[in-house]
Length: 398
Image (cartoon, rainbow, N blue to C red; front, side, top):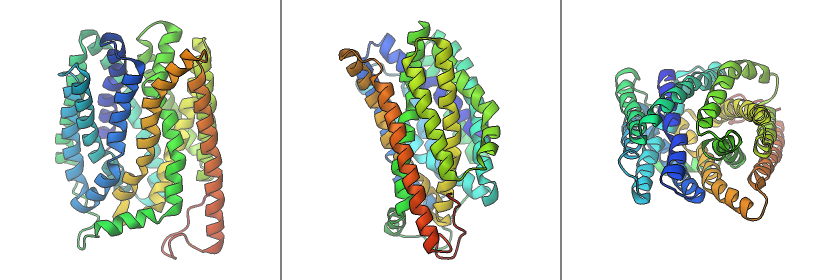
């Protein structure tokens, strides 16, 4: 699972950031149209995960991951075939469908394969390991992009086709509903009645709005400061190095705080970082802001995973993860499609920093939301000795 996650990141980060630049610089797409393509891919993928997660709990995790990797490989390869907007949007939707199949399922598989007391550490280690894929992507993409976007697309697609085979050969069969299959309606109702989980989804939507700036607007800001397209590799490399060196120490440091406070601290760091990197003309200050941004991401994601795994019923693990990706669908979708539009609006009205101030405001709203959720959880814990009717120890939310 760790090797698979690392190579997935390599295939994804080798293509998607450079794809945005290719569309804008080579095919002369507007920033709005580029953002729309990225947003369609994002929303098509994460918007379907609540369905594919339910399906994975029914049919088994290995099958869904293998098929999803194969479909993603085809979709990424198609980016090297088409150069017209309809063709590019078709490739984006195919790639998104594959991602929708394997993304929540691999998180659920890792959860099932990991003892509960080790899950926070394992998810932090996974995030560290996957950054090796980003570093590899920076090296590979810089070389392949000098050849052609087609070479880059076929390379990235080939990685996912290889991972489909690797998963089929090495991942054990995981069935969480062996004997009696739960009705789909019951599975959906269980999640939709979990008010605290739904509140978490709304709050984390703000996190994904911020994080998805890394795929277009943050690289564009780096290019604007340096005047060099290779600044994209700089952004990816800095992110990878910071997470490789800092993820595990930061995760250990954050254990002294409740998971709610961890999310609050992470969002505050991201909000401050995005405001700094988006309003400066200095590369040094940009990198300092990006350091705060990346550090906040390292805090929020493991904490969010830990809350999700604690709230999820064992037989509905992929279902919960699938629903959790709705936050990425809406937050990430608007974060990419809306950010290009906000950049253009800011330039038209003479306020080029408009996007970055709005991003900081989104961070503030999410911080308020996580504080309110923490209070609601504490009130519930005061009324009940356990979170799940005496069957599971309540999650310490501070």
